[in-house]
Amino acid sequence: MLDFIQEYDVAILDFLNGLGVVKTDPFWLFITKKYVWIPFFVILFFFAFKKFSKKQILIILIVGVIMLGLVLGLTEIVKNVIVRDRPCNNSALDGLFREVIHPKSYSFYSGHAATSVAVTAYFISLLHKQFKLIYVMILWSVMFMFSRLYFAAHYPSDILVGILVGFLIARIFVFIVRRRLR
Image 1 (cartoon, rainbow, N blue to C red):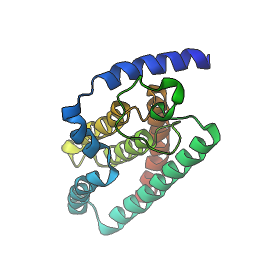
Image 2: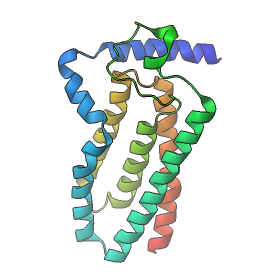
Image 3: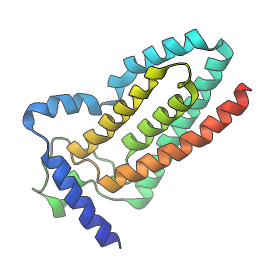
Image 4: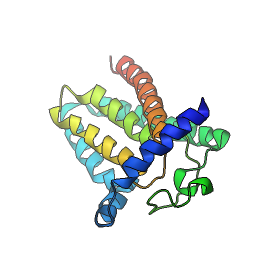
């Protein structure tokens, strides 16, 4: 079963990674960096401050930071238990992918996918009534995740599991925040 998944992972990744061209590498290198998205979140918080009380914002932020810490911590634990090499670091796949970056940590599951989906689902669930433009966060999340496939830093299954983990954790924390805000 795992060989079957690995075959599809490699085939799908080969296709997606093959879409890359050298001219777009700088754009995707920019997109894949976590700190690049800070201005986006500053704008989001600016609008949130206009709609919510300081106490509500504080609860949303504190719970959001705890959620993010949990997602990041769980991701690192799972990566170090599963110990799956990234496609760009897998010697059995040398020469198959267009490799631009070589992250050192393990592949399963994608922290970029888990964190971006968790943050996106969390804020959309809490703020969609106040800010219709918040759905733009989905585009951020998709671009962030695709950058990992573009660089062969993750297999598609790493991304899919990261999406699932991020979404489930976000749903739990949205439930917690909504109870606290009542």
